[in-house]
Image (cartoon, rainbow, N blue to C red):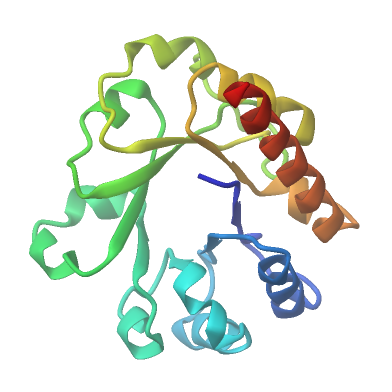
Length: 203
């Protein structure tokens, strides 16, 4: 599972163009998370992403826009996951979610393809946001192997290999992309580091 990118929560200059460039570079999954956007703003950003890439987009808000746009990937926050009872309505979608402990991850129902566990390291995008536990040391408690485990929070290029070696299935990037003046270059370097780890792991 290749590195995932999550959008900056607030607007970014030339954001749609950057997203399209990242997808041009081979990015496999882009999570569109804009907690303060209106439905119209969210729809507009989707429409500025080339529709050939809609199969790689994951919607965090306004899930009803998925069918309108032909998108089949949805993300559930912990709150939305706990409020949802009719999972049959989502059988045609690829689902992901977010957790903040191994206990929460282990208790996930089988319909989630992968889950973000965060923050693994102090967040780059949210100053002062960190876990009370060392989540890297919690991985031995994992009992859920139906859902892929994705590290989120403070993930920089040099941290990808140790994260993967400790048992995560993939990484998600946010601050290291959007707090940079060179988001495309940073993504490319992270992907090279990730691919290098997998090449060495196969030897």
